[in-house]
Length: 207
Length: 207
DNA sequence: ACCTGAACACCGTTCAAGT
DNA sequence: ACCTGAACACCGTTCAAGT
Image (cartoon, rainbow over all chains, first blue to last red; front, side, top):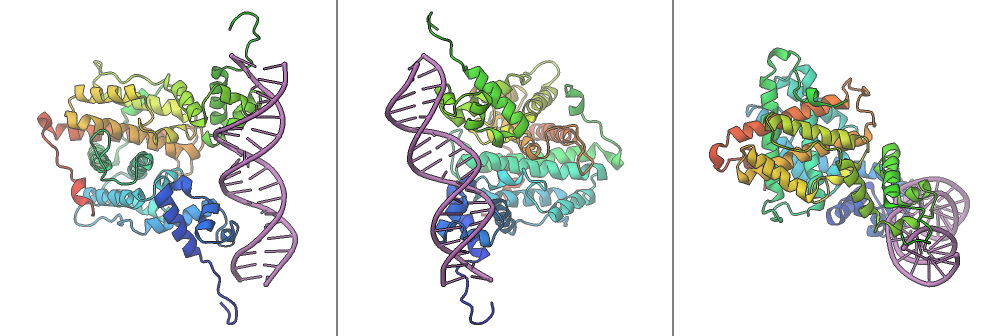
């Protein structure tokens, strides 16, 4: 940036934007370091001056996508509507980028930031979930929505397009979010005052 | 198999078994055609005589894993317990093979066979779900459990191992299955006689 | 019928060199 | 500081050839 120095032909923003375009049109598997560089008209290795490696690039890309998440906040509309709204916004944000949400769920923070993870736990505590279950509830909701994004990853990018079964991707995610919210509400109400819950599923485990 | 012919040094079963060992120890990303062949002491291309390509091999591997699924059947224990038992068995079967369940959910049949998909839909119809929602309900359950397997894919193979948050993978999946079942029960009861349900989530969609 | 060997078109990434 | 070029160690896969 000192005067007299010629400006760089590349910025990190350019790289992230090119990566987003690639994922949008070819899916996450279409995102290669070489393709990003080609898209920008530079040598395959030029990109490495701005990002550490491919994992770093995907992290930057996901950060960009997360900017359009509707925040998870406990307002006057109640925790159920707020949660549903937040989950839909996650799904809508990632749906344009096939494979990205599926990849994020495998990372330690389940596709959100460290801070997003903590805020979610607080949200569920404030919503009346016992402290021991706030984390489980939040993880459950994130796991479902990213699972749904995994399903969508291959079935085509347009969520409004009718599919073989006559249902749209939207129908699935709407039903799913309703079920997630209803399930959490039921578990919350069955658990007054934070007494330890007895899991029906636990008794069914083999081994 | 005609007399006088020397027996082949390789069988498809050997290949599938070697592939399972590789996934078990190195995850699905550790499954390469070359690694499978090396494991069996043959040339990288020998494997191609028995399987069409890598996708075919993964399908065969998944078929093998599915053999240990507890069938989804509507018995006297009721649909809720049967569903929970089935989901747990899916999770237990795939959990040994990191990344496999996550991969399967992206296929058109959500990690089960075509027949398994149809049987599941019938199961939910028999359980009293309206025909229009049986498919949504089944897809929801499968999506969650495979989402959970995606989360487990990176966090280590031993489901009993305590993690940073003090919770085990088992705690998450038990809570999740309980929530899935509770959510489905609630939606089913809110929908008497198969009248079209109004989705709260639908109203929250932007665009 | 069953397997080998060489080769092709890809990857991500390192490293030295240029301007 | 910023980018190029060559190279390495991997992939999946094709194709011709051997026994």
